[in-house]
Image (cartoon, rainbow, N blue to C red; front, top):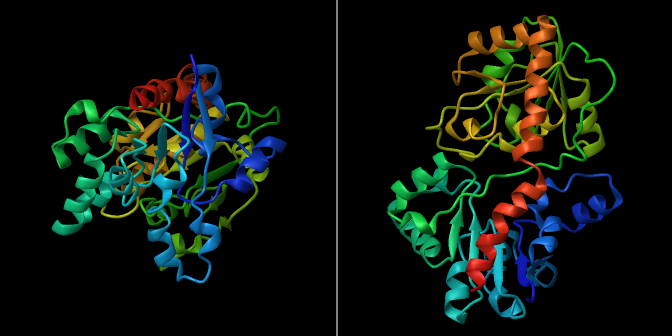
Length: 346
């Protein structure tokens, strides 16, 4: 039987990341299973809109929206399009008569909750024209069904994975180091900084400057931005605890899936993890510590306990690594996606 031909269309160019993955200097987590589908009967290939290269004279925002319009005509040689993009591709593909589109849902729920009536109606109609909207977890799926009224069969779940061969535990001893990694707007660095201000530990945050606007940086905090993946891996291996501090689930910005990648990377590295209790995180965190969102005292107490209790920390780290190996490898992610892609093609 011939392999199902699938085009991956990412929100931004992945050429550099693909080259780094091939060289072994970056994980392939953010390729979303692209490299793991061949053995499952899916021939997947990354494709980039031609307008990204040919439309340089257009304003960026105009080019960004127009780039999706010709894609169905550019992808006539494939059977399915797999993409996190949802605004234009579904309408364009329906106008052309295919190929069917599978949308991977990173933050559509938050957009729908925040959008005005007209914007929400357009997005719902775009998603209705897809072959399916794939969610990261059951909680996200249930909310999307409530927001849209979609048939549950139109909203499957495929659990995210992490490159467990790149993010691995180190052999060196853990330092008294706290790390927080992530730049999504749903990250809560205000609460995090209040929690770590009086903790006897070095703290490293890997963020963008927009995450820090208006915040008072504690003296024990070091900021790093856009670091190489090798340095990111080293931070996880050295850290005594990783923290994913998030706003409450009702927060109107960022993504309802915020924190998933950082949770998986930390667990793959056997790094003890403390995370704000959000519905989607419950689908991914095993043996970690949950704290109420936006509660600096609870966050501080949990971080200090992990720093000061070596047995507790070792148990958390070991449970996290086992969880990744059992459920969240990139092969696991591909195994969840492949049947959905084949069904869309047929």
